[in-house]
Amino acid sequence: MISVLFYIVYIIIMISAPAVVFGKRSYLILFVLMMCAQFNVTSFFKAGITVSFFEIALLLSSLPILLYSKSFLGSVRFTAADKVFFAFLIFSGLSVVIAVIRIGIGNLVPSFEYLDTNPILRSFMSLNKVILFVPLLIVLRNYLLTKWDSAFLNQKFLIYLAYSGILPAFAVLIQFLGVGFFLIHNNPSFGEDFKIVDYYVDRPVGLTNEASFFVYQLFFSFVALFECNFRGLIKKRLFIFIFILFAIAVVLSLSRTGLIFYIFFMLLYQFRSGLSLTKTIGVAVVLSVAFFLVRNLNIYGFNIIDRIMSSFDTQADLSTIERYGSTQAIWDLALDKALLVGVGIYNYGYYATSYLPEYMSVIQYSKDKPLPSFNFVLQLVAEWGIPLFLFFVTRQFFKLRKSNDYFVKIFFMFLLFYALTFQVLNFATPFLILLFTTNDEKDTLRA
Image (cartoon, rainbow, N blue to C red; front, side):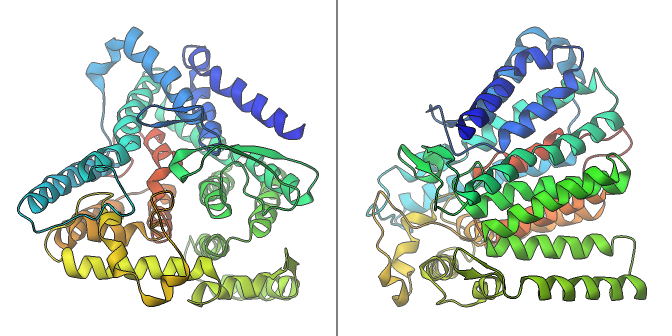
């Protein structure tokens, strides 16, 4: 029954999008989209792109703007953040052209043992989120800028992004308590067929399909929460309450990578204004107390400290074996086939299986279960080629260094970190940065 309420709340939020965007408080569309971005375990249908809560809310809000408010389009402003995604699309398209040529001359021979889609078609199908989300979010952002001051929208963005993690965090608590919380798992982006999971004993996942994905989506709400506190946008008591809620949810998720990244972010935040002896001692004391409190804590039979340390053990469990084995295979593919040019965006699966290490024989793959990528950065190296990848990363790095906004720097920095663990662009969350606005003198990422 509790989960039904969650579905009802999110459906109401989703269908309110057109009324909100044309209402007196059109900035509330930021809240609508950020809330919907968190709930992606359930999809409504697939039409070239998986259509879930976020996709419907985005279409319901942006398409009416294109139809009825075209006058603002002449004053559209592009930020450097937009250009990051544009560059990603251009480089991806270039990699596809190169892959076509390599396949045509016999330099690449794709294997269809685990994938039966045409490699070129697969590339463009896998880019569908970037192709759809980027222009529509830019349209929506520029529409809001005709109605509201950019500094005001900035504040609302941070507040709503922080709030958007509250319900998913509560969902984790309810799932952990085992009182009955079902989710419809049918999102093909996660390789799932229709099934209903009732979380009596299953590991909590929030409103997505996997614990690591929950902590990934929640992380940006976590960062926004700290930014709201730093800028004085929310009351201290509310900050503490939400922080405790998020912290408990992350611990209960048992996501090893999540725990490491959250701890690392909090360390960075403490030294945001520079190093000092007092801060260093304070952080050391807090970490010591935290270690003492959780060293004997067991959840679902796992010790928290042992769980974190297992991230560095290649033979810890099947999940870790697959993570390291997949990464090694893609690395070997990059060295063999992508020293100069790559194999085409999202095409690693046609080639990487022949590079799997021997210890991966305990895991069987098929067309229903193809080889996953646990390192999107390394995947791009193999698919774009090393020179193109290095040019892209170097260019974006220097853009990021010029940014005066700490939140933007942290957002992209940890987006890169998470890209070392899975395909981060399978989610709507990273695209939300396109809604973050600044004034005319300061770009989102200054070019």
